[in-house]
Length: 452
Image (cartoon, rainbow, N blue to C red; front, side, top):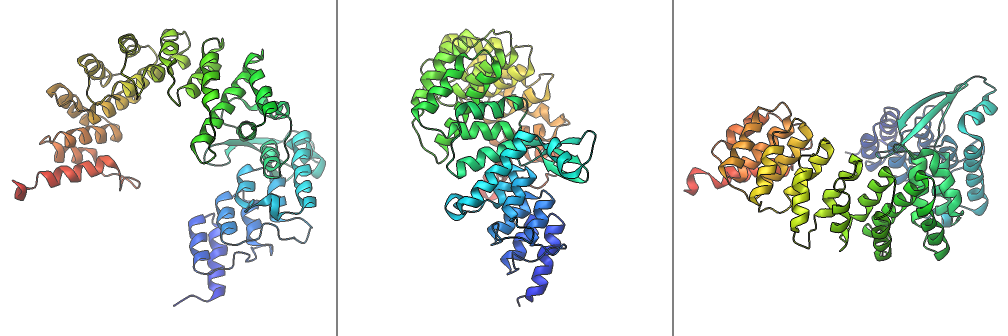
């Protein structure tokens, strides 16, 4: 029997107040009103926005809440999201076809508001609004799953310092194309870490397709500031990502551009990013590039070299194989970890690669041991040395290492497999469909007494 509407609405209010988006979706699916008033009498969507709860805001919007509804103060939920400076909130309540749905005057109002915050600065605007003096309180928070932003509090008000990102994303939504130089200027103060303003400017620049925009971007390759060149590399990464996920485009020219750039970029941090983007797709010149930088002094660069040397559609050359074996002894554990992964790419290991992995599986760094365990466990190598090396990991404190070892034993039909999975111990949520757990089931099925 369906619950009365008022009970469903009460469930929805309780869910949003508790920041429980799954419970909110369940209440909406059962028939709760998405525009139910919250505790303050405003639509419940405003409650989610005030709490910077973008997941609940998304659930409400997708469930039918109106982001364009005019509120008593003349704002709308979407305009409030813009004011709060959280790109995650704006994205959650943006709704479908904002350029077609929202009147021109309302679009301009949102752009002007975001630009005002961006140009004034969050702390200064809070001082103007509240009359409070002194410094603002700042704390770094996660805005969504991938990006961070500062939360700025002063005089009893709190916003997030993502108005630059909000402006960049709204401009794209509304068909406003600022000069590439302006996007660069928005990004460069945020090059370190994973800031929303950096990501949004990169994304907006990556979507630009005009010859003028491309000309402005590639000119950054020779900019004297490394951050500007890093911005270009990040934009090229974004272009590749967009090409692979829905927004198809020909990035062949990007590959040639990256191949040339990789040979003369002087800054180690920028070069590492260039190589990261360059190796997203195979290129005939990548082995030469990898060999060139195999002994680069910056470990960030050396961590990208193994990806240059390994190619899926071409056999590994002798020089590349020798370089990988040298990098397997690199002083940087990040380099050794990447090599441990790459050495296992050919499932049939050469004797030299097997020996390198047997050394890496005993590495002092647990991350390196884990990568080597993955490569050995999934390889076609059935030698006693590999089997024993996997079994030795069952005494590791790290559960995932024990799980990888048990998985390798299961693939090899080792009689210790059941005991090995007992050593792994109980696995928490998220492992129900794990391939390593499934390997245990398959082992038990293959070795049932009635199959003999």
